Length: 62
Image (cartoon, rainbow, N blue to C red; front, side, top):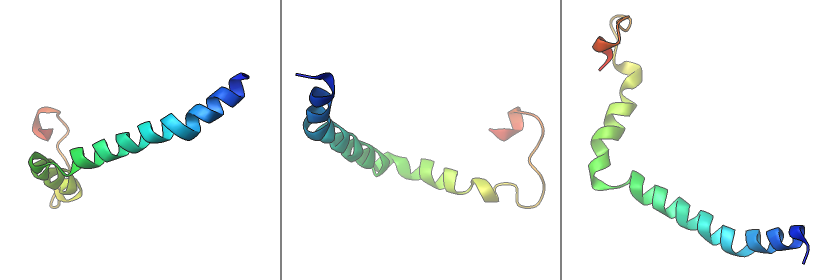
């Protein structure tokens, strides 16, 4: 069996299943109950320093 033929058959069968399961796992990880606070904090990043620029030192960013 040629290498290309083997890789093509593998990609058409098992790799498709692996990537689909990875997608489902990432989707479930994103919608898990504890992630709401993280998503809300990330969504507010553009509006965090609405009145003035962000501070220059690293300690003030946290």
